[in-house]
Length: 155
Image (cartoon, rainbow, N blue to C red; front, top):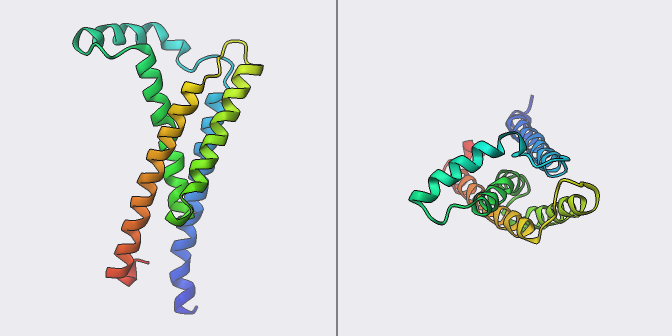
């Protein structure tokens, strides 16, 4: 087997793992976003108790704050993985895809799910999370390229 073919196998496997990861993450986003009830419904009472306890220490912690922060964090992994997969020169693609996905989820929630409410605040939080994910993905991609320049055997 030629040397270049042996070198290509780990890269192909790595890309395949990234593709599976980004598809799984996007599927999870769609699944949770279009679930008929809020995902926190089974433990909402406990969540409100924890938030209430935290408010005595940190006044800014409200259900809305936790919900917004969760929506930010929710989109970070998928866009970071997609950015690494596509490369930093195509950073806008995962960002745009995440915003389109978020708008689609919120439209489904508004029009088809009686117990869910679509919200522009959720789209905003998801877009912020997607932007953070893209920044992380760009940093990872940059680090990988610098490492390849220093040590070509890591390519």
